[in-house]
Structure formats: structure tokens, C-alpha cells
Length: 68
Image (tube, rainbow, N blue to C red; front, side):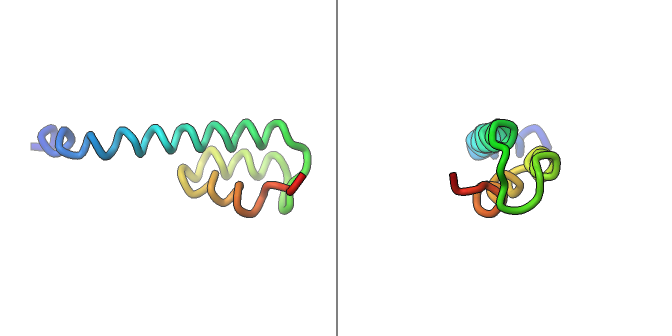
């Protein structure tokens, strides 16, 4: 029964996973390349981006990234 439900939701899950990975990788690369942050430091933002799935990168781009 669970496999049938997974196949039903798969068309919605695949794009969500792709967006999550793209956003996470983009934010992580940005954290590693830029030395200045509005709040916190490089280690803190790297942990947040990696561990807090979709919300972490969004919070980083909204509040952590310094306007250079």
C-alpha cells in the first residue's frame, strides 16, 4: 500500500527534491566563497544551510548574505 502512495506523490516530490538540492548547493557554495555576512560567521551559516533543509538556504539568502 505504501508503494502505491509513493508512486502517486512522486510527480510532486521529484521537483521539490530538485529545488531543495539546487537551493542548498547554491547557498552552500555562496557561504564558502564569501567572507562577509550580515549576521554570524561562515561555520554557523554552513551548518544552517546543510542541516535545515529548505528553510536554511532561504534564511541565509534573506538575512545572512551581506550586500556586496
